[in-house]
Amino acid sequence: MGVFESPQFSKGTYDVAECIAELTEKNGAISIIGGGDSVSAVNKSGLAPKMSHISTGGGASLELLEGKVLPGVAALDDKDTAAAAMAPKAAAAPKAATAPKAAAAPKAAPSVKKSVEDLGEADLKGKTVLIRCDLNVPLNADLEITDETRITASIPTIEYLCSKGAKVLACSHLGRPKDGPEEKFSLKPVAKKLGELMKKDIKCAPDCKATDEVKGMVSAMGEGDVMVLENTRFYKGETKNDPELAESMASLADLFVNDAFGTAHRAHSSTEGVTKFLRPSVSGFLLKKELDYLKGAVDSPVKPMAAIVGGAKVSTKIPVIESMLEKVDKVIIGGGMVFTFLKARGLSVGNSLVEDDLIETVKQLEEQAKAKGVEIILPSDIACGDEFPVGGQRGSTTRWVARRTEIPGGWLGLDNGPKAHRGDARLPCGLCQDDHLERPHGSVREPAVQQGHLRRGRVHR
Ligand SMILES: Nc1ncnc2c1ncn2[C@@H]1O[C@H](COP(=O)(O)OP(=O)(O)OP(=O)(O)O)[C@@H](O)[C@H]1O
Ligand SMILES: O=C(O)[C@H](O)COP(=O)(O)O
Image (cartoon, rainbow, N blue to C red; front, side, top):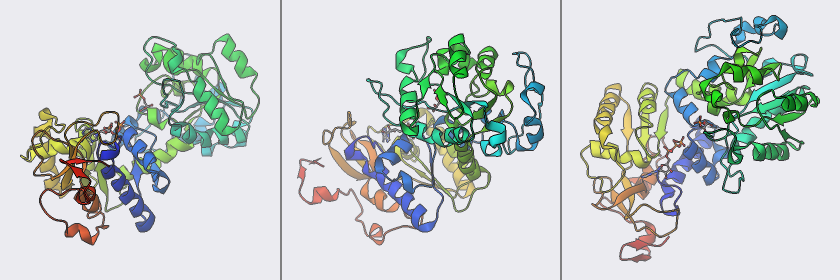
């Protein structure tokens, strides 16, 4: 809802998270949190365990909510082709770049995909499984993992495969290396962390391709062992869905599991390409769970439904807001995109972040919403700063709260104000507190100001 990285402007974000947690816990609402920064804000708030589902996908969840088909999912075997999919690999398509998987059953978007839970010990014992995970985690300058959510989220499928006697080869990209292998994009720290979390000795192979060294390491694996293959994007062919790379990776294994929801919107060699050479190709628990929640919300929305859309820019969220207008009763707008909406309504927004080229689009969006009876809710008051808070330093920026109709010139909106904290998210969700209705009109100051911590408009919090 605001610049949550700064303690001065994080309250609006945490308050909305609290409201969602309360709705989930007390009212039985289904809550789905998606988007890299939104997830990290909810994680920081400590409320993540109270949400129904925290998505590991950024771009992937947006594309799914926009109604797009995710290539990494579309390429997996359908449940209804189970008999064909379980045919022995030798009888399947020959492993050649030119010979895609024979059972080219059309994969309609609404089909139910075959999942790893459809495979038992008979299918897995002694088999080598290539699993595509999204282990693209943030690392600091010392190459330490700063958020291990995606690693933790990948473990249930890996553990399941191990428990059924499979040898597990986990592959993933990390970052966006441009020119081949680079230490800062190596999956070695990820393999180490995965090993610590799973209490196993997990090696990182020096390559994702079937080099002699990697083949040797694979043949030395025993049942229940796990090995991480090196960054798939160390090869330029990965993002081009190069069949040769896909075939080489696939040649290391007997079957494929895709559990990389976060990368399912990419048609890459390790997400889509390998499915042409391995049978069966099924979803992992994480991918399935993501689809159940996110696709469920899109395909069979449980009413009433509200979308809370925040973030820095409207431009990245227009398609998702548009597609949500078909599903939801309310859209609550937060973050930097608020100001393009306010400006489109003819209000002055001071120095706030605005995408002027989208004013007309936003006006049309508001019209569309009106025509569909969907309410677009903007925060009723705004916590403004006299400058953008740098590096999240406490107190370096002067903070002032204004009604949304009265953002002073020279100031920029950085968070929801206290009236919005109390009402805007709660009122439409049926959680309004009575005092919200009694708040004074006009510019209001934070309680800290009223308690005398004000020095020439500067609030030290
Ligand atoms: N009023 C504002 N002015 C400028 N930046 C803002 C404002 N409100 C929020 N932000 C910034 O927006 C960023 C989050 O936006 P973003 O669109 O990246 O979110 P997301 O969709 O959850 O994440 P991702 O794009 O990684 O999937 C945060 O870094 C936050 O500081
Ligand atoms: O972080 C993500 O959203 C996924 O890992 C995909 O990464 P990419 O945007 O570099 O393809």
